[in-house]
Length: 345
Image (tube, rainbow, N blue to C red):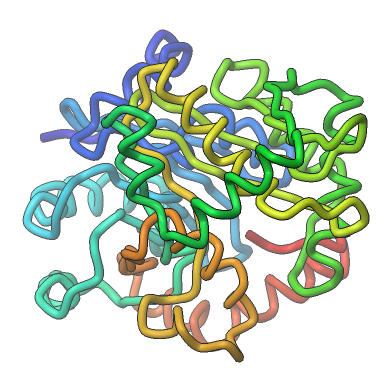
């Protein structure tokens, strides 16, 4: 196995290639995400190792070398498969003055997996992307899918229907981005970090332009009361962003929007729908957790929370990595925040 940079033809067909990875591809490995990050001081690189396709984001760190981050990748299924690509990946990284790679494979968090990763010399870290989520199998017919929801969620869906809530698929345009962002600001209301409008607009528009993203709105009359931004890659979809209002609150509107989203995704051949983000499974019932409400809503569709491992650092140059880990990352984040008023990642 040899690792090399992708050809221009491979880059142009990147999304169709990554869905052939063992994990079926991930939207954070797709070209829409790469294009967004390229606008925010990351340099995307597209790597190929036999039939495995990997997106790398690079930042140059003075004195230490290059830092590589592989969001939600590589797209292998377990630690044993990861072990097979690490030697060649290490040599390729050395050739490109890389001092460590932050890997983020979608491995279910188990004691056995954590031990295997540590045996490979990988340092387990917190995930950059959210490592805990609820995933829905939407391969069944819609009636059976809805029947699997919790009684409360089904009741809320019926309530929204009685209140004449309507749903629609909305093209991603400048105008619809403004509407979504305004409602997102009201929804989050300072409870979590939010990037500026330009970042979200770039992210949403990049996926809309490549056919891998769509907005869905729920409305009461003419009032928009709930919104979803959905990414689609092959047979997988992710509810990347969502917003709702209490100003024109209608019980069950967001739940009904999920049903409409699932129906739309099924038409597109999607069989796996990731609701993207909950508290960890051992905190899902903790009412003091800042995302308890989010978790409560999502587990109404599936009570099983999936915990992924997060990130693991693949150390190429130990001395440079120690400096980065001890002080470099902290300084880089602070300087970046001061200069760009934005999150480093």
